Length: 419
Image (cartoon, rainbow, N blue to C red; front, side, top):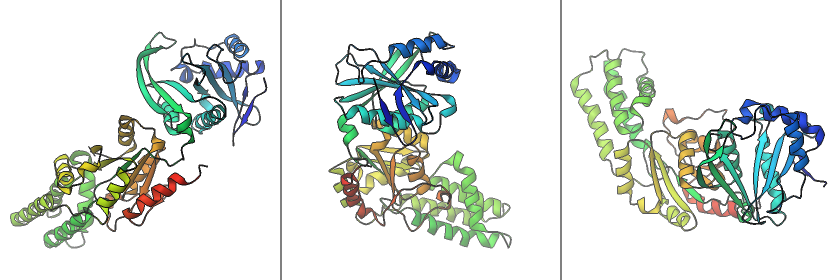
């Protein structure tokens, strides 16, 4: 049966007998076979047999054999193969699986191919796509997350590898309604806290100025006292983390180090008092924050993700009067891609349905975009030196002048036609 699905860089069509040597070579690669059940090496005879048996109707009915499609470059070079199999529960759903040769990985081919087959199948009568991915297969997990499949469950010891080992699998599902939703129809909006919902950096800037005033008279001429304090903070990050307590300890250490231990005890006492005052400072909400959370919460599930000292951040959240808006509150030690991935997985949504709102490009934007999620930057006039993002980060993202513009931005993004 003739079949040809073309994308910007790929062609999906039927495997033919001439593909058997290339298919055998790809499937014999240990990196490919590590999460598969076929014998290694994968012989040309096995490839020939698979091709001969996989030419049925697309989509297959529940009693039909699985279909195996070729993923090719326009010149015919075999990139990998894609399986579309019957689902025992009925003809309205099919199972899909994908293999991409090692030499072609890391180029986005798997994502492009799965999107293409999803579009083709949903254009017909198929209502749902299902995929099973071994929990250790991080690359494939990212592909299905990125496209918008939902993690619907975990099957323990459900798949037997070629070496006899039983491994767990993540069950992914993508429905026709999921596929047809606008690209930015988010399920979850996550908010940063400090300098997004309430003032924070103002207190640190004031404390830094006082530190320079108090310590500079006891330091040799020519030393940049403020830069030295920042350097001590950077050194201590992996030990002390973020927040006022870490900042207070870094001030004391920097004062002692810069003065060669001659800093007077009354100055140290004043530095400690500065930190104590910061810890007890009332929460000062930024403009329009309660109204924005109220509005966004009517149409989305909203969560809070903030980093810093657990005790202090918890106190600020409670005394802010905003805690009731959030279905989930995460106080984390670092905002990196691994942390966001853990949170998004726990929340049970694909990254494509998650949007982070915050003031720091380094912490709130770049690691989220790296996962295939979305982010909105709302700049704050003050930014900690260690939150500066590299100028050449190369990422495009939405930026709003104020948080008050967020509800309108969400509405416009949802109603805009999908690409």
